[in-house]
Image (cartoon, rainbow, N blue to C red):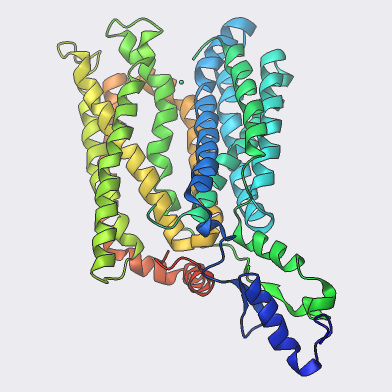
Length: 460
């Protein structure tokens, strides 16, 4: 029998056989899904391939974040070089960048989920390098404005899409020189990253599924290709946890302006006054302890056949909120000018607490969104990233006036008071999180869709 012209009565079974041979399956509604044993699905890629791709994506996100926080010190250097007033210089280097990042964080996630991630990484990183050169070579004013706006817009891609790439691949378990050289170095690194990112693979399962279908010749499908659909529903998610994570993240941008003067009052030189950021970094590392605990909890639940829900991973959020408040109060009243008798290292203990809680808020709430929106996690991060960018854009503008007007101690106390009120949120969220999820139509639909199309036997 001619394989390309099967009898009419056997066309459906013939098509199913062809799909089955390619590791795909035909559902009753005519949609094509991945089979759970298909090695071409990103969740089934070799670990070395996953580690390679994720390592470069995370490094890109890390470097772009470092380059963005360099904006405030670069603004001071540009102010001295060009004679710009303080507000204009800060606005061009920080808020303009962050506002454009907020715009990008709304636009790029849906695009990545419809058309894939790899092209966004490669093209945006290459353009990023060009923008850094523009800022370094044409420091005032047009080059900086254009370069910072476009680079901020493009920075939304690693900041938001990276989490989506990680969700594609894994389930639930798994710093300052002269102003121009900041951007010269940024240009060099992103140019190299552009080449490296060409070596990663596309990880968006729905796009790969469409590619799988294109492998079938029309003669084999015999006119049925128009009836075959890859499973890729497109909706805008409801976003409840997105208001929480931006607050501690914004504090890091505020501290880029506030911390150096505080520690210069301790006797630190202008250069060494940036060393306290290492205390925040130590706090970030301590977050590994909570991740180990979360992993053990999930492992125990699976061994005992207890269902896992997103609220099971909110422990770091519950711990991080009071640690954040304690760290802020400790820092507020162990620094000059009102407190002169306490060693500077005590205040850094408070910064360690701030670093730990910042990481917990970001990690836990990002994970919570991913657990709720699953394959559409990148779109779920859009509102969070947009609000985070707007708050981070505003903080360098009000920080100098706030700390000069109120004094270091009172200004930090205001922030500590906000952090104290914030402590009430995690317990309520852990208690009523399931009800919030139940009200989200898209969260329910995302879970149903994921259960229908997943190839991960361990769950989400």
